[in-house]
Length: 263
Ligand SMILES: NC(=O)c1ccc[n+]([C@@H]2O[C@H](COP(=O)([O-])OP(=O)(O)OC[C@H]3O[C@@H](n4cnc5c(N)ncnc54)[C@H](OP(=O)(O)O)[C@@H]3O)[C@@H](O)[C@H]2O)c1
Image (cartoon, rainbow, N blue to C red):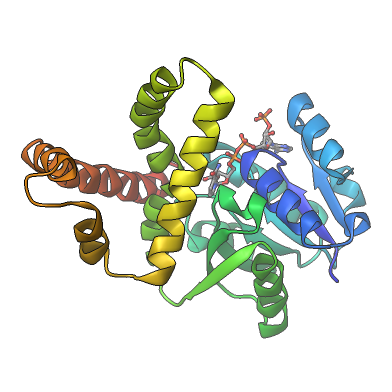
């Protein structure tokens, strides 16, 4: 197994880190560099070892997990110290040519994971910018330990994955907030009951899709003519819920494209 370094150990790095450790990845091979106290504590608690930039082994695979505004500086820090680093950028928006115009002697891969990696249910799009086949395969194996991977051959597709998959969990959390409020009332404020109901509901949805991938058929299996579900769905349609959801996703994809111009 390869040594892994998370350069920036925040939300997404912690999700991957947790998934890797629960998949049996050797904790001793997972290191991180971070300046933030809270994230440092969290990453340490998960089992990773804090190191400094100067202690990174040049053979390590370095996951760049900082916000877009910090990415260029962080990339510069890594490349100015490590000879021919192997870097996997988890950063939204910033394109490979931006990085490679600063340093050529680097093996670069872009990846777009999501926070479900924490539960080994992640979805990660991977694009090989200029890394060797061996490095790419190693990175692919790492992401496969925390979920499923999709290899991308055109870099601009990463933006679509960012808006759909990277941001994806948050859309469903957002929609669930409406549901949560109602369920909580139904359970007289019992939070643990509310959690069980929501989790069972979502697990049921997931199993149903596993059984039958046709969403219209699944809807029809719940909705009956002139019934309650049909009334709810009709109201969703008249308030253009689908179109608005689509618009939200499009806005996220556009933002991913804009980031590349901004930084
Ligand atoms: N969160 C997601 O679900 C998700 C999904 C897919 C992709 N991504 C991408 O992953 C990247 C990270 O997102 P995140 O949500 O994990 O961010 P985050 O929680 O803010 O974590 C970034 C961490 O990196 C630290 N950092 C920044 N620059 C540093 C430097 N030069 N040296 C050492 N530490 C440094 C930050 O410290 P400070 O707090 O002090 O700045 C922070 O602790 C983003 O570019 C995002 O586009 C995120």
